Image 1: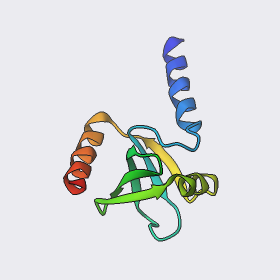
Image 2: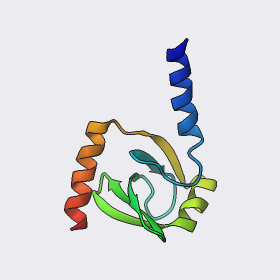
Image 3: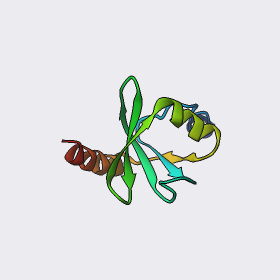
Length: 99
């Protein structure tokens, strides 16, 4: 029973991600200039969220208000939380292009 509760808790946290990206999350871009890309959340500052774009491996900066709009209008859609090993590869690439 506790295993089912853990699974339901994880699914619930994914579905209720709200309008702020969470660590290790990947989002599909469903329309707009970046259609077909996936954004891996990396970090934020007071004005924007920063993502690594896959498969292009480019830095994408998204203003916080535009991120909320994109989530609300399904321009961006949460896909999943990346496994730690996969996220570490993305993080290394992000740090490489961000320096």
